[in-house]
Image (tube, rainbow over all chains, first blue to last red; front, side):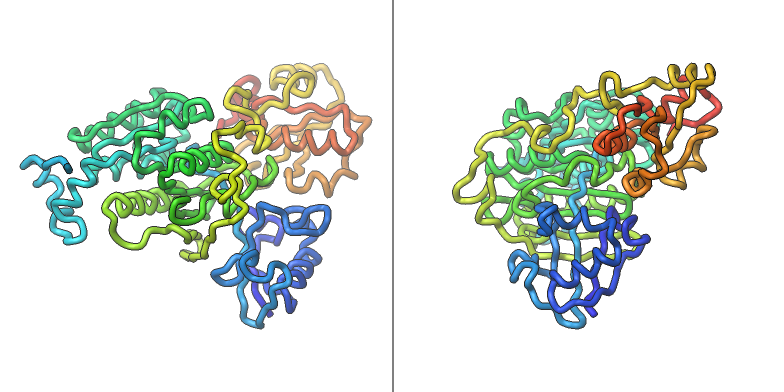
Length: 92
Length: 384
């Protein structure tokens, strides 16, 4: 099953887990299964219309899924998805 | 014409001169270079120290804060002797102590749409060491408008990100993040905390990238984003591509001069009093204490995280962390008067927004949070 890396700011919604393994043959299936597993994560990833939010960057291995086939990108068993969050800290 | 080095400078930089990739010419390039550092806090501290030590001829510093005691856990350019002084002055003094041969220009003002182009235009490289989304978008856009590299670094708890955004040769920050997350979704370091050494790791990497850009050596992080996690000790790289629809660096840009970044990010400007909602929605710690003493019935809700209770707590308050408020609305009674608080008032202000959206009206935010309570009501509690 593909694994998905959860960034620190979102780990409070995945019981602190940094990586989760989720079933799915496409990015969309994995993300839907993930947010069924952790419903409070859903609003942070999808908008009201069920599309990925504009500030959510989802990478398959090294590539942004936007540069592949978007949420329809097919996944292999050992693929690794990574959520890249917007973080802003630094000066304070 | 690159400037010459004095005998003293040749001795000072001898370890650089010995590296063939730097050498005398490289050191002269560093001497003739100018770098602007936005923010002299967590990231800006190591950046400024190493730029000074490396002999970058001119360094500009932008910040408007003073050095506070709680800064010293990570802002290593400042110290006890500069507490309560201007950060830019504190940083300049330390840099000139390391290296009196450089020039340090200070801008004791916030970096804003009004002054950013003027401040940045004469520098070769801009380093983003800010702590908020509006200033990050401003820094990015100004670098695109002026055609300068933006050495980006950002931190949260144990995570860091770093890249070089140079729209002339690759993507910009907006290509990756076209818009900021809604206010409140991503906690700041002031609320979420940060491992003190983390900005050291990320800041020194930003400085490394800056020196490489000036020297013209190696592979800069243009078109790549590095993700660091201190707990896993992992360094991962992903590819970044230019977004053909980017509103700032795309072929048909919509934005060609600085905009209102506070409005764009939906967050209050620099003059907003932190830890408040505004008007009738706020209550001071003193007033709350008086009302509780009078026996008024008030449901006090602490929206901090459980581990923060070990630092300080108010007797009788119910803990509902901000992230659980929406799921636990059934525990609250909208007919009852509710006062929300957190560490300093920001998270409780957001909790108040959530409750008001859910139809609650008899709800107030304790201005300045439990830290204000510690200062005004119960000096037995620590401020953190």
